[in-house]
Image (cartoon, rainbow, N blue to C red):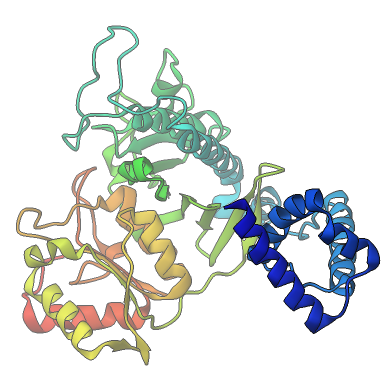
Length: 442
């Protein structure tokens, strides 16, 4: 077998010599040596299949020079630090914006504390797999599984950790600006005195704002390494409101979204992004992984007037109300929106889906269904803050029967059908509700 392989290799070499030219005397003597032939035949066979057998000496030298130059360039690149953009920090942005608006002048510390909480939640999300943070939460005092949350769901370790971080950010880092908080994970609001473990409810009672939040939206996505997020909003307590014995009043929370003074969300994905509105436009900040600082990468974000994306969980489409079914059907029949081919994108996390719509345009929807006639999204913690952000960016937020921000909540955990996105898309959806559905009292 080796002799036959040698004959084939020598024949190929002989053919190459007649075509390209005679080998050097050193090469020829090597080919005529029996011991060298065996060694050369193996190496030549390998070279032949590798495609480098017919390379000329000039080409080989050129390749060597190219490799040397590439190595030198790589070495230079490795020694040269990547150039950073000169971007404004979130701290500087808040310092200026809160100074410009006396109504929110005391909120800069609170919002910075929230940004720090987002950094910590981002680390928790990234380490959930390696640090065994999955599973039901355990009460450290009793060693038993904690009770279900107000939504009837078993609280997970991630939910409890992220909820605690947000509670302490608003109450411990706001410099007494926030007096009470309400979380999607808890049945009732809490005074900041209670959150921080103080004996008296009168401590920190001078704060004039209340905060609402969903600490970790779409936590089930973490198992599949998909995006998740945090949503929050801040209201100013109405004048003359008397706080009860627990240090808070429901009237401070049960306000229309138009009374919100600030709203934002953190998206934990390929990058960590904080999107914020203080009532005068929308701005996006990206977490610099080296400096662990939020930098303003998306100033004055604007959603397109019309977009071709739609984000609905169509697995439930048969359960949607008739207006929504008709809207989706007509849209898919036409195949285009605003002259562009329609595209469906649905991640299953409110923050991720709405952020995609904000950047690219289109419509996000979580409609009512037969089992959930008011939808599943909470007005205070999710729908209203997101609607404020989208409206401030030039879009619209609707229940299908009217503006989300005009809905007056009657309960802390009230739910509403939610449609957010480009103004033309949302307007079109509302027209289908007027034609196919009955007007809602709201």
